[in-house]
Amino acid sequence: QVQLVESGGGLVQAGGSLRLSCETSGRTFSMYTMGWFRQAPGKEREFVAAITQSGGSTYYADSVKGRFTISRDNAKNTVYLQMNNVKPEDTAVYSCAAQIIHYRYVDPAYYNYWGQGTQVTVSS
Image (cartoon, rainbow, N blue to C red):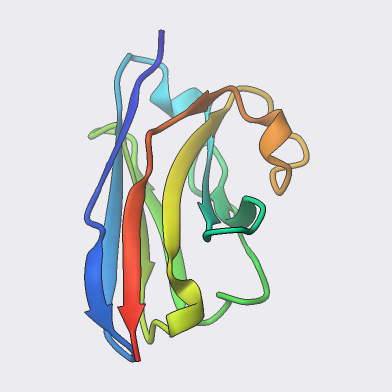
């Protein structure tokens, strides 16, 4: 069973930065496409960013493009989300997910494993 554990969430002022981490157990981390999703109260879970197995390709939601950066370190079984110039509308629970087959990376239904999530709150 693959386990994902997020960290790095917290309270930050608008315009500030946060770096989220997601450490994954097991020896097959490099085989997964990894994604970050977020869910705000009363809203559906939405795609934030994804990165392919080798890190060669990255994808972003329009709402975070140019502000957030996804990266991974396969030697550390960890994926990161660097969040810069955060806005109050970025407030949500952020979860990482692993996808065995790279397909429809924006759709949470196509991810196989999920972390518990970490809260990010942006104050204005």
